[in-house]
Every structure is written in structure tokens, then in C-alpha cells.
Amino acid sequence: MVAKPVILCVDDEKIILESLKAELRREFAADFDVETASSGEAALTLAKELLYDGTNLMMVISDQNMPGMKGSDLLAQIKSLSPDTHTVLLTGYTDLDAVRDAVNLAGLFRYLSKPWKFDELGFTIRQASRDHAHQHRIREQKTRIRSLTDSMIYALEAANQQSDEDTYSHIHRVSLYSAALAKAHGQEDLWVERIALYSQLHDIGKVGVACQLLHGPEYFTDREIELQKQHVYYGHLILSADGIDEMAANIARYHHERWDGTGYLQALKGEAIPLEARIVALADVFDALTTPRSYRKPLSFSAAFDELLTLSGTAFDPKLVEIFRSLRREFESIHGSVRTDAPQLAGSSFNRDQPATSKG
Image (cartoon, rainbow, N blue to C red; front, side):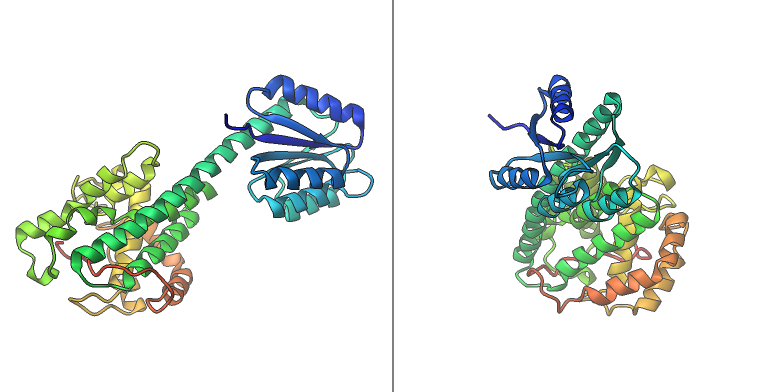
């Protein structure tokens, strides 16, 4: 039987501590175990024991004004031990310094006044639980994504019987470019984290066509070009398994669609293309333009940047192109820092994305 996540309550006043414990157990007994400690020092010792035993410490709710270790100090130390633990500070008086310290040092999730309103506390716990579960799924999917990414690179390498050291760098840069665009677009942090993660698999479908296309695009027949385009279908198929975020499949399937409707395979137009795919499409093509290929030399950063700006309203979402324009320094920093001579996985030479201006 899997142990339930734990909520740790901390207060030096026994009556308050028992009241808090009783309320939480009455409302959340089916979902959480509730532990208590009467001082910051005792709570820190108990938290270390729980974490050492592999317990999921979902939340620590602590009073601020306790003898010895203050609540804000305790929560800061808890957060350093377990970054995923949500921290809630309770205080019976206005202490802006304590709240500031808890926000800055403990990544404070919520601040509640004493006496607390249980509906407010209950809402806080339910919200934290949803966020905690989501973060857990993200961690699991990160592990899965890393495995899929490594498998994709090695499969492409095996299919081509040669190594392309830039494949992994390309994946990493596209991830960073996509995250920068999503953040500047105003997406919430978790959405940005998801696109940074799933953009790494935008070309995973190429494993479905790699063995059939062993020579360079300068030799591709029309039929082979059409076959190469099927990698978006294969990618969607691979990433449509249960338990994988729909965003991953959307990116794989739609990142070669174009704003004007002339992309492939669905010929979607404008906002009918999922936002995540529009973002990755821009990031992918920009990196392809600045990356050397066996069949062409790369464009300089400036030339590629200017080239992409001309594709606003045709290949790419005009709003995203304007955001891209505003992020020139950040893109230049990413472009300069993630190089092919950096430590990376062995990769494949099959990463041959056609520029947005070509028919491929």
C-alpha cells in the first residue's frame, strides 16, 4: 500500500496545534497523514526523518512566533531540503518582515492569519495538492522524455550509421528558445516548463522514416520528400500513449504547419494551429537556419534573425514573430552558449529540417 502524502503542522501552543490537527484529519484523512511538532527544531528533525524514509512531505504549516526557531526560518530550511514541499506561514499579528523572509527564503506558498478560516485553509491545501500532483507528473514525464530523447538520437544514429554531434545541441536550443518565447508570450510557469520539456521531442517521429531515408536531401525524390513529411504523423502516434501530456503530441504533429495554411500534414491555418506548435515551429526553423547541415552552410545569427522576421504572417504567427524580435539578446545568448563542442550525447546526422522557405 502506497503511503499517503504528509502535512506537517507546527505550533508551540498545544491547543492550537491539536485543533489544527483535528480539523485537517476530519477533512483530509482520506488523502493525507497529519503529523505535528511543537517547535521549529522538533519539526525540522521530524521533516528530515520523513524525507529520509522517502515520505512525500506535501506541506508544512507553521506558526511564525515560536520560541527558538521562528516559522520563517523553519520553512526556509524545509524548502532547502525539499523544494517540492509547499510552505504555509501562520501568524497572529502583522509581521511584514517575517512574511518577506518566508517569501524570499522559503518560497512561501501562502500566508494565513490566525485565527485561520478553515475554508481558506482547506482551499489552500487542495490547491497545493493539485500543484504537487502536477509537479510529480512533470518529474515523471521528464524522466520519460529523457529516455525517449536518448532513444531517438541513438535510433537516428543507427539508421544513418554515422554521428551528428549537433543533434543534441539542436534539441537543447529549441527547448530554450521555445521556453523563452512562451514566457514572453505570458504563459504561466508550468506551461513554460511543459513546452521546454516536450519541444525536445518535436522530431521523434523521424525514427519512423530514418531507415527508409539513408541519403542526403539533395538526393530525395518527390516520393521521399513526402515520406519525410510523415515524421509528424509518426511523432504524434508515438506520443499519443496514455499518460503523456497532449501538448507533446500536438508539438510533434503540428510543428510543420504554417500560419498561412501551406504547411503539412493538416494544412491548418492561423490560430487553428495549437500555440505550442506555433512556438516550436519558430524555434525549430530559426535553429535550423543557424545550424550547419551536410548539404548547406549555416546562416549567421544576424542573417537568420532577419530572415525569420520576413516570414511573419506567412510561415509564422505575427504576434510570435514580434515577441521573437524583442528577444534578440536572449536568443543570441542561447545561440552562443549551446554549442556543438559542449558536452552532449552522441547524435544523428538525420536532423535535416528544411528551412521554412523551402518546399521540404
